[in-house]
Amino acid sequence: RHSASLILRANNAHEAFDLLAQHEVGVILSDQKMPGMSGVEFFSQVRHMHPDSVRIILSGAADMQAATDAINLGAVYRFLNKPWEDDALNAAIRVAFETYRTQKRLRALGGKRQN
Image 1 (cartoon, rainbow, N blue to C red):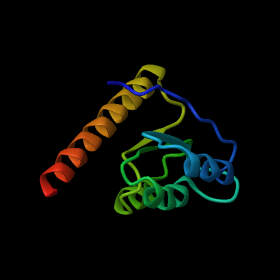
Image 2 (cartoon, rainbow, N blue to C red):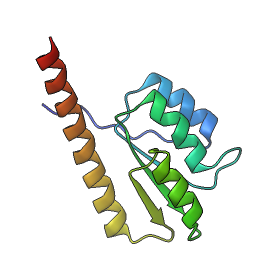
Image 3 (cartoon, rainbow, N blue to C red):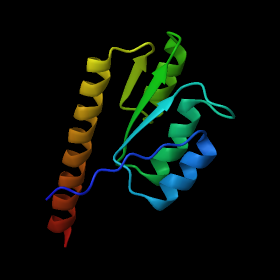
């Protein structure tokens, strides 16, 4: 059974937090440079709201420190450089959704075993 797909769009982190409070979100794509906070800061907060979400950061600069921070914080699944190749981005998003679904199934199986 597949749930309906919905794409949510926010113009800034504040709008994104409002949307995330109202919806279960499987994959989140964010730019590293946003008004008010970085993508790494945003995702470090998001992972507490939606721990199963798969998070992808886009960055225009080859900012290895941001990539390292993101990975070390456990806040991101992928770090992609801009400009991106459409096929590569689409493939990354497709795999991210597969990863999210797998994580949900495993969590559901683990919960059933504990009951």
